[in-house]
Length: 301
Length: 179
Image (cartoon, rainbow over all chains, first blue to last red):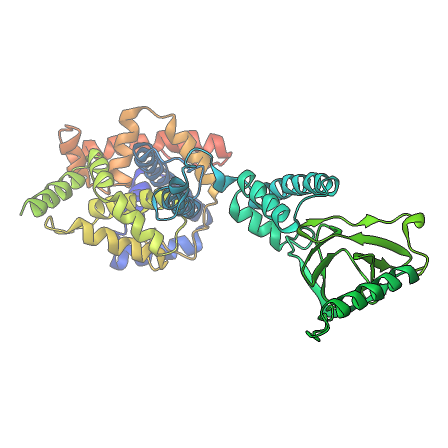
């Protein structure tokens, strides 16, 4: 390749050949294998120079940009920012908003981060323990009104636990605060039981009265032996009674049909099943007093 | 007015081959170009390389073509980006002949490696001639040669040097008459 050829190729590469010169060049390119090789080689040289220089400039620009691939992709970054803002908003709302933890005075307890169910379960267990203990205590105490006791239990429970939690516990299936329930109420006739001697005494008494005041002609008013008996069930299985005038309130009697009342020597005796109980008039609730076999009159037996 | 003057100055400097203009252009247009490239579906991590490529193409186009000195670089850059993305622009339209075998990337890399080991002055000379497409008159003026013939002689000498190194590297034999 001489100078002329190199110059010609150079001009061809620079697109400065035209007309006859270009036609002659193309004809030679088509026919001359070595010439074609020379042109291809010079073209490669020029292209390589251009590539190298362009690459150098691009590297300079990239160096200036100092671009580093971010650790977190842009999309994920925006999502994280959004979530952070939402999270901060929730925290601010919880502590500054109306009806928040701040109002409750629990700002530093981070209650929002504790699982509500866990705390509730713990509180429920504590309350259950208290109730169990109270129940056992209550069973030992015989001279207490069931209503009062219940109130006390609920009061102590309320004092020890949050009222809201108590409500939840009360709603719970396992632990419920039940009230006394009236099973049935009906009038029960008292069967008078008296010895013959007694009967005689009574006749004598009546005769005397008649004789002493014959003009009066007044009859002794017949004793009303009917009792209004109310059968109640206590949630704490309290067993006892309260009796005033002709009203009898019974607790712990599961079969009202099995109850019979007997009057014996102005004393009231209740038969329940095979057991006999002595009943005294009382404004307060008292537990049943079981009669011994020897104390039971023969007529009742 | 300030923007236009800056544009004019930058175009003028590009035509003179001042590479520092690229830094200014990068500072000025990278963020907006990046946004534009992202909107066009280019991955964020690929935007710097794409921008650099487009900017160098723009730089070469301004150098090699007779564009007006009042060219709005910003508009031209975004037009170049669109063209680049649509693959309507071809990087090299200079040589297109069915008779010339296409050179492979490995060959280009090998010759580029040979080019990189040349001295600075030789590389500058070849770059001015084949990248910036300067005429021998312009090269003579730039390199303080007495006349264009001397400039042509110096360019040919540099090219011959590169050809020899490259032939040795590629194991190609072409006979040169002046050897």
